[in-house]
Image (spheres, one colour):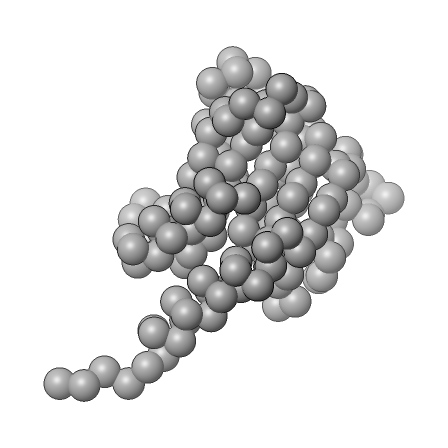
Length: 148
């Protein structure tokens, strides 16, 4: 989670929503890491976990991340959760819960659907306060009145 939080902080410095993700191989080796890039790339799908999974698959030379773990600072949205199912991720660890936009423990609960292709093991709330704090600080600063 340290590396995912680092990627989230770097994303915030770039003006992106502070979400970071890391993909670990079956042996625990770091395969890829990313922070959100939606603003820079002008791509609404450029979420940290999706970028990290794409990069990990490229590095492995395969379309599947069998045996891999995705660590992300925020509960994945429905799009990213569905992608994890397609990538056949073994395990998902996430930080802050997302009651508004989440797709794992909230909203459509992608992995609970009987039509879900693959269900990873899910561990939520890992360093949730720290992950949530980054998001709260980021959005508070955006909402604060600007002087001048």
